[in-house]
Image 1: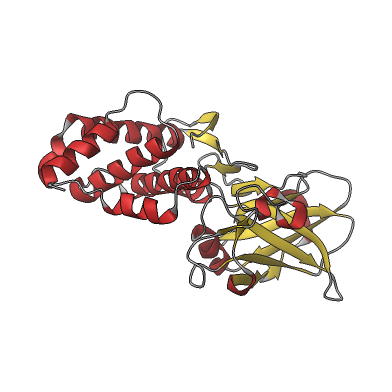
Image 2: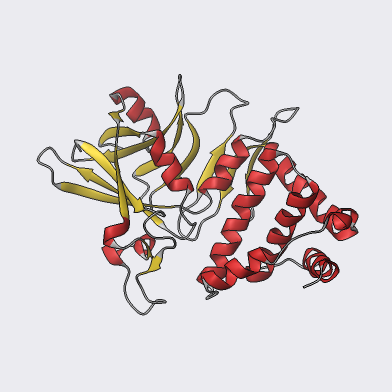
Length: 301
């Protein structure tokens, strides 16, 4: 494919005026990322947000049936020669992405929708929120997220439970052992493992990574972070490796957390959706606006 033809195809992808969905939206974002590679269009936080949104679009395309190998070839084919950096389609789409990032930066609380569960990102400009980024489980009895601690941000779990857990263990796919998640439902023909839709995609038994909590949260902090309720509040902090492990997953995967009792038995299993975790984190790095941000918004997928 000649550079001129490549540039024309990318400009065509960027120029779509109707709202794009599925593979078309993925094509638009890949083209814009390739344009940034060639033309340095965005700041690092703006690019991180674009990459997170691109991953979401790729995931939607994969859910719709596009094979990973096909999507890999599609990504590899998108390059933007430098002479095309001033094309109207590229500059217009770049400005649109900047405006999207600015709108998110001006918002105190942002919901990043998932298929089953959403991530909420909160900004620090109105004082430090207890959670920078958080997601509730489907029963609304537990919250997983980035806790804005006094010394450093930590991946934490806070929950309400009638049974006191001794510790908690996160289980996720290890990308070094299995490059892409498996669909355990065979396209919806089989039930999801663990009787939870978030367990449909993940790693085979020999490719899983388990990360144990590194500390318990003190009872007062656990009570502040956990959902409201009449039963006991418990909380656990996880090492930084757990954040990196979640960031390396695809949005369609589930995160399993086993709560373990004093005798080593699993007393409860919680599921969270990887979803737009990286997008929620990317917003945290955007420049804080002036004046104070708007109260709330739901981000696009």
